[in-house]
Image 1: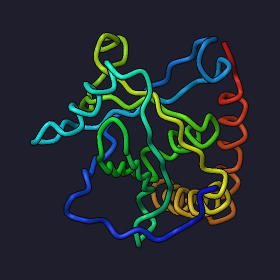
Image 2: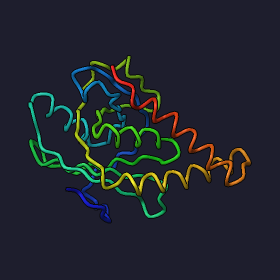
Image 3: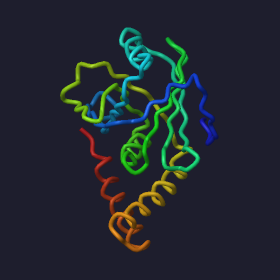
Image 4: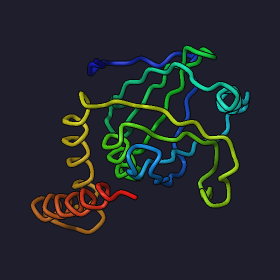
Length: 187
């Protein structure tokens, strides 16, 4: 089982900020749950495209993962350690305010689809592009994630909408209740 751990990025890591998201729901995948699609920008050396290309022709591969945060906790980090058919470490960076709902959904489904795209990517326009389905367990991370996400997002709400701390926390909790209903919907 994965454990909560500190991770120091290296020069060899492929750093991939998440730029957009979508979801796919079919009966054949994750029992009909909405599986998040994570779009990352192409890197200059085409390393991420190479991973997706290799996995198109390989039925299965090996990838372990673990979750964490940057030191300031404003960015959730998902480290993907590919060992077969290619060795590569990919570090996905999720801005907590912008992509917190996406992280919640990934933690709920324990899987995601990885695709290359841009901020303007629309799943309907790139369904034929390469995508990679990955299992990403994160039970060990849920408690820390929920606490940190609630704190940061309520701070964001206080600042943006001039709410009191209690109002912001109540608003966040109501949003989470609504999202909990939505994420449990199945095809």
